[in-house]
Image (cartoon, rainbow, N blue to C red; front, side, top):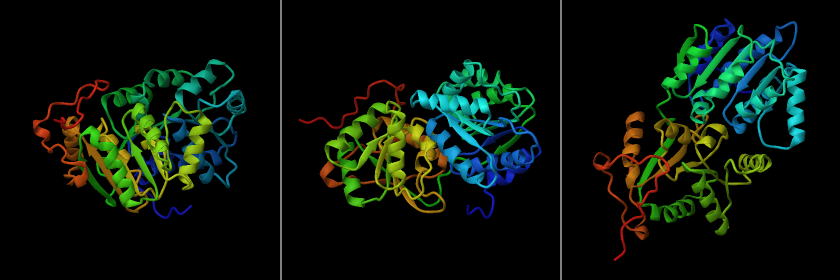
Length: 385
């Protein structure tokens, strides 16, 4: 598969996992962590005499669950080891396939919390022989409100097991969860605060009213082959998708209100380059692994500085290059300054095209703190006389 030398997370995690120790690891998407936990688990399963449902991987989104399953399929191709993703959406037939796979005992199950709990409540799924529990993107799961669900799932699992917790950040609630479910864990910390060196990072100071015209200008000027546009709200993702559709541009909005089949079709089209522009929220920033993305555009500044690293990390993967552009309005200046502090560099602020007029000046130290999420922003730009 092209693996010649281990990434830092693989180098540190694989020996510990083979020693059957619990792990709490801080490593972001794109560092090779899936291989870090799956390769040693596959090695253990190969040397197991009696095969049962051996490993449960819990992931926050169906897209990440599918992605992990695809990677396992590649890693385990010549081993006869089976895996199945278990997630919501789909029809009754999908439910039956997932239930039967759990009952009959696939070697590795990759599940989202909600669907797994629904199947567990049926009483026919048994984890008596489970050897490994892996929580991937644990911080994202807690952000999505899955703390109680995870604790509930664990109540169905045997106490004698190996537990591996992977998280991009390490807030107090992750520590709380780790203390609850891990036994004397080994801590591994891979730096997450630096975007890849191959990313050209830029920003524009804009009023909200100028954003649509600036976005259109950038897409027409640069002719990127593959672009992801991020927004912090599902409502804005839908709005941008509708605008692109009206203008006849090859773009699709990706959000949770779509049917599962629609989401899969959009991702398939984007990965195969039939679709050149994808619009989504931060859930997409950790649930998609596509090489060759030319540019990432942050239509607004992400609420969490770490999410900026995840967003821009969709481009310049596998030592390639890419461009990351962020639109900063007046209210987001303090938030963007926090990002610059986190990554340890000042991102260049480019001049707007003359046709758009001037944007706000960048003075983050003078700006008030961003209001709570959900409050309406009245930053509409300069008044017309």
